Length: 468
Image (cartoon, rainbow, N blue to C red; front, side, top):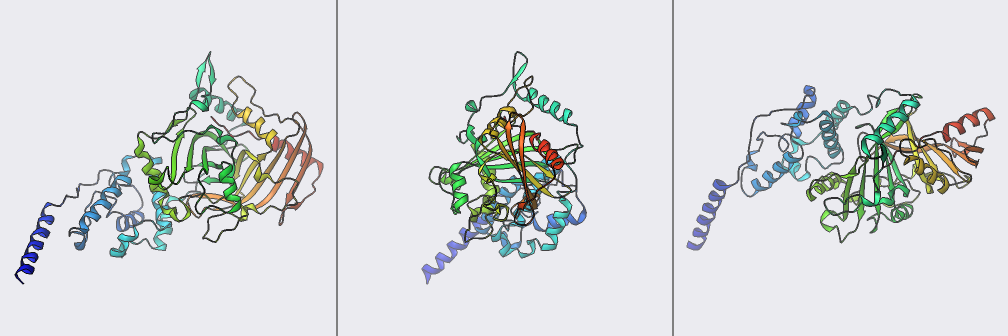
């Protein structure tokens, strides 16, 4: 009994000592809170401020050690990632990006942390509150920019190249892809990405960008067979982003190149970062995004909610079937075998979005067409910018209905294909065949010669994507 009493006294003394010496959680007044409608701020205050502000909002049961240590860790980590007491000091674009990521984390069930909700159920974001936040962010409320003429668009493209590229005798020279510096975590740049095939594409209303997600041969094979749980080693993704620009025809086109991001699968080599190597290169000079290896924490933190999908946000366009929740985009791959070609197996040339009909269109090309497009896309100022397809080139313009991306609020991805148009080139710059497949089942739709001529002119005149 005496031993038990002494142990009890020692435990009480130790507990009291730990309470007295526990590290503090700093608090200070808000210096630049989010400027938002009161109903939006109330949701963030109720559900997020406990961990994402400089205020101290601990429940009585959070104060005791050892639970206090866990709560303190969550608060310090949360403040570092998103702090509602200081978010107003950041540029508008940065604030918007943080809020979209926060809403996505809520939508995917990653925030508030499930462990936190078990003890703090009042912090749960209700469906009605989530609708309020989405309505406030309103990703599709504005178009990207005012329409510009074709001549102005080409002039802006040349100006972008001039500003971003090295000058040799006054003529811009694009940086050699083979000489791009690796990311700070050691991930090397892969210059072969430009010829990878399409995994998917995204129209991002949250930041007015258009994106291609391309995959290397290993990734494409895995997507086509459904072998993505997990993705096999050496699967490589390239997510390429361009700023959107509204053309004179009311269509939204990719304009200024922004960045390319890579995910490289190697379960052993990248075990500490969820089995993936991460990297991002921005601008025409392809400058590594990171300042030090710690930048990877942004990547893994953002992709953590998709741990059940091997950390991949993208739903590959494929006819494969997997026994899992929505991880594939099978509907977008519904193209009959009777088509003269299967364009999803070709390279990509460009894309555009029709904001009126809510459709995404992607221009694919066979090898001859893609090689010609890439050569024009890399032309320097002073060289010809017009794309003239060579003989044997075939291009296919595929138009899909859009649907909301279930993995990212603010993004739209291809849904059911509505139209596939093929153009066969017979001699340099001249087409000799136009075929159109439309409607349910994509059956051939024979059209009159004048419409066919207009469509061929439009399709062959589409400007290739701007690549570094």
